[in-house]
Length: 491
Ligand code: ADP
Image 1 (cartoon, helix red, strand yellow):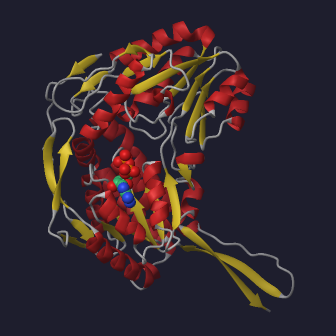
Image 2 (image 1 turned 120 degrees about the horizontal axis):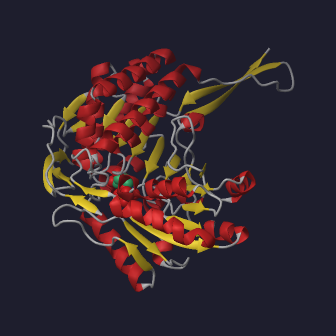
Image 3 (image 1 turned 120 degrees about the vertical axis):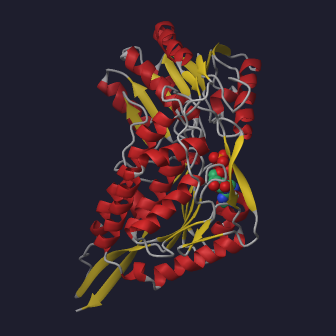
């Protein structure tokens, strides 16, 4: 692989927002504590950020509650909520360069991805939900007797939103868009590794006119600020994206208040290449499906099933792509792969690379650290992987692809489904019946046919099994922020 660890021209990036954003004000954490956020490409501290905890979440929850129950938000027409969301999308679009640079600085993803991948999806998601704000409707129901019966779709209330570090702005948009369109107010806890763009988005939301208390952002750690959000009695719902182990803790912590929960969790998604596929397209899809975002995608196609008869020509194409991937300074416009997010993730990925070798898989491409500074790892491919190896079973969340082969369709379906996860799956084939049979039988929330990572704000996304419950995006994502109310009138 070509590595370009030379320093690229970095735009000067001003870090203006590092405090808690509560009730329209920027405030230090009540404890006065701060924590450092790091540039994963250089391991340098970017900024000290307020370390919110239970006291700050309490202030945020009270502000969000007030804004929901009695503030201007509660009286605002749905269409005007939509207009604010459109304005937020426009303002983000106007500052897309600045925001993309901040995202790359804090997260390490290549600037081309932040600017041309994440930012357009953020803007599109906010616009999609802006258009929904005045189209949330109930129904009239013909019940027995002389009654008028109708339903109202009402906002669920204060939404606690806890997001991870892999797509900080995009996860913010996926959470804010439907919540705000539905009329909820928000207490958000961004990931401790990447708080900066979410805070910046809060500042922009205030500028475009969101009333105080509607959006509150409290940076901090999971077991403190995150857990306090989950336990807070004034918060009605938790929308969480992260690991299933954390989702279990959240389920326990929210048991007392029986909060509404939606979870978008991990995966070990099967990506299948049939012998009749367009092999160039499939190799490109397998490459993007795994290496996008340094392999740090919950839906990464990390179990690649290749039909035995085409294994050799296919692996040649895929290995060439992986070996040519440009790893290096995320601010270099030519860079395709930046660093992993932090030391923990770096160590975890390297541990799996060791384990793959010791369990007997064949290290075909990569496997080593790139450079001495920053958390860079070579795009890595293991073949001769068997289903029981840890690299075939566990979510690695890094640039490590496990290649398995198969000969028979029944065997394939059984093995594809032999996982605790069920987030995504894909198949590459020219045979319609094979494609649709796979789509129907694979236990996953999203199935891509002859494509990978084809996301759209209108298409619901979420998991079966340990990959989550509920769906984000689309109308289903919006409904998750509403309650149904049935009204019956005696005529
Ligand atoms: P990741 O491995 O992606 O960091 P986590 O599930 O640990 O996945 O973290 C995702 C988000 O959940 C982060 O914002 C983190 O701070 C938060 N979090 C971690 N532990 C808890 C917890 N016990 N309660 C609530 N939120 C938590």
